[in-house]
Image (spheres, rainbow, N blue to C red):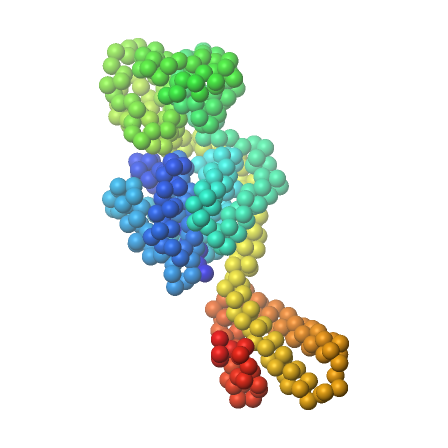
Length: 437
């Protein structure tokens, strides 16, 4: 078996590229179904967030999907030219792929180290993959290992106690750029999970005049009631842009919601826009307007770097936990391929012992049924004990020299037993002989 991840993230690709390759929940499900139809022998999971798009897959070495075909698949399904994103992709196999997922799930690969949203997003991607019947033995084990590792990291380190989200970093930036943020008039665009985080952080820094906008007013109204802030109809947002001081945006959209023309008529005071949505809500050209300062999620680098530096000790401890869990997973993964061969070898040994025992008892007419049963049980115990020691040796070979070497060793024993059985024992005369299977 082989594990592979193909993807890009905020470290390898700019937002201009990432936003072209994002998938909504419904699109993830549709894409998984198409992947499984195109590559039926493989397992798949698709993780898509504002900062990453990654395909995880597992398959036998001889059926692993061709990477170029997968890249073309992504290109076709998102209607994006391959040249637009191919140079930004990373591809990891086996141990590196497992390590990457565990690093992602624990937030160490997040834009903001310690943020709590990513594990929920990883779990959701796995849920959708299971629902689409795209996972199997390997990805099931790997994702559950990632969940357990995330829990261990957040339990044994202080990352979770001092975590901040992208929303928190956005408001921290607003504090740095706006002298009296408590007195600022703020518009929050989007009433989803990220929008709610923005509202909570704004209230924590003392903002009093906050208005939330959402395409569905019911959600905006519910959030306004929960946090004792204002909510207005989506149609009033255009006018609001001309009078507020700060806009923080996190609405889900396929294209820009606001362009330069939306600000015609704005005069006077400075407007700060922090657009943390991917795809973006504001056309980057808006930043060219006088008095308007537009920041995307990729512009939060300085504040984010401070976050990373404050967590170096936690990061080091988390990396040790990840390394241990990756090693444990790879121990299992390294020997799983030899499982069927071990089963075949076990069957051969018991066939041989049964044939020899039957040959012995055929010439002993005085043996009772009870005695036969006791002899069979004793012989089976001896075979199982010998097999146990032999199998442990195979596992050791697989871990130290690789599963291919262990497989070759087991196959050589089976082949030798087949040849010896045909010339020396009674197996070939029996219907259960391996040669007659």
